[in-house]
Amino acid sequence: MLMRTDPFRELDRLTQQLLGSGTWSRPSAMPMDAYREGDEYVVAFDLPGVTPEAIDIDVERNMLTVKAERRPVAKADDVQLELSERPLGAFSRQVVLADSLDTEYIKADYDAGVLTLRIPIAERAKPRKIAIGGESAPRQIRG
Image 1 (cartoon, rainbow, N blue to C red):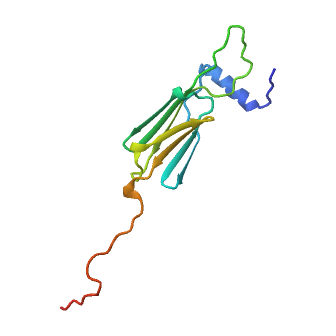
Image 2: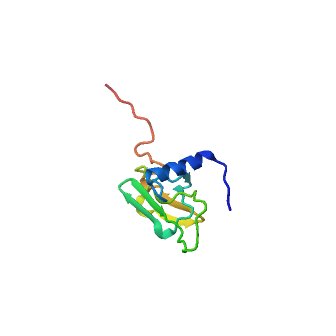
């Protein structure tokens, strides 16, 4: 048997039972990291216990939406649940992407409970040299 000593978690569990929320938790945001790596912008979402089939990624204009659902483990009739602390239900996160990102070529990988999106920097947003044209000698203007 598992024992826990956190009285606040027990209070939260009792409150959920009284309010009738059942075993499913309210939708919540998933933790994420975002950083630039070379010519890509990387966004990593923590989704432990979520199957790849339960993840939905959408991009509309510059709004990235990630939705996931953690379902309860199927229980046999002779199994009695002793402790349930892992949140279940729907999780979602929306991120506004900069116009400098190329949303047409987003790559998504899911490994060890982490969803990693790689978004390339658009060519128009990359630094470039501008050639100077015209005469090489300065010109005098007479007025």
